[in-house]
Amino acid sequence: MMKKKPQIRKRILKNPIINTKNLPIKKKKLTSIGNLHVQASFKNTILFLTNKEGNLIKQISTKSLKKTTFKKNTTYNINGIVFKMNSFLKSKRIKKLNIIIKGTAYGRRNIVRNLDRKIRILSARYKVLRPFNGCRKKKKKRR
Image 1 (cartoon, helix red, strand yellow):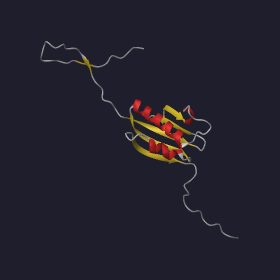
Image 2: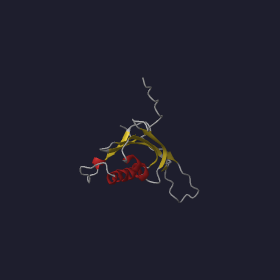
Image 3: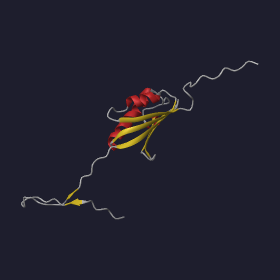
Image 4: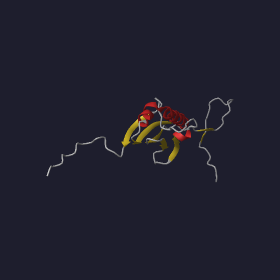
């Protein structure tokens, strides 16, 4: 595989004494957008970080913390997961997130609450299998 040569801009200086080397063009840093999928069950909580297209970048679960014993879905462990995810987001320079939450366990609220304040949340969607009590059902007729 051949390496691509960086684009070079010639710099012309008025003073001939200063060295006139070719300097590479600096590219602007783009803020990248990621999707954070939260799968919160009663036994475990898993975080998936994907890019816009849906390709997996990072997966963290409570089992990845080495401090956990038999109880994985506690608030202490969930805070540890979110701390790991915050440090990963800083290293990858992801500043905007779409959050997609699945499941009914209490860990889902702690995850959104403990995300870093610098990370901007664009949207938060709940994909819950059971309804949040929805509409009231019709009364059955007596016969």
